[in-house]
Image (cartoon, rainbow, N blue to C red; front, side, top):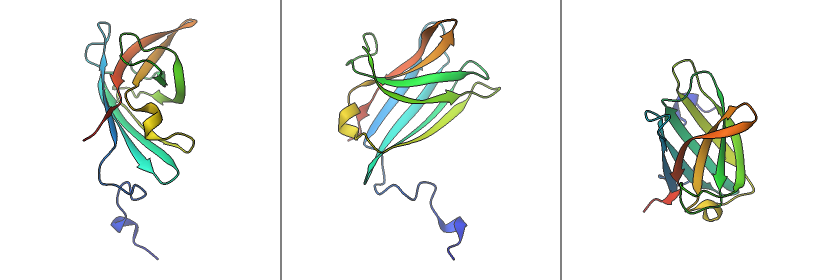
Length: 133
């Protein structure tokens, strides 16, 4: 039996570094919000890993990839991701495996985090999924 302590944190990832990265930054209403999202290629899909700080506390926050080319005009949602749950300090992390998407389908696209307010979603933060060279 393998010793669990010898297994790497992300041992299922074949490459050493991500293929895409987005730096999410909050807008005027949430200037302290920031986070990084990394996308790794897997043999049968992608793995998305993100860490965030400065979020509204203890909230369920919708998280999506949009079809636009910039945050200011991010367009329609093309990839719905699981909601992110912030803790009492306004921090959260996300680990998402998707088997029906590849990194080229979302490269250059905005990734946006929202907050439910009544019957509408308010944009909290946005970043572009840029290729890592």
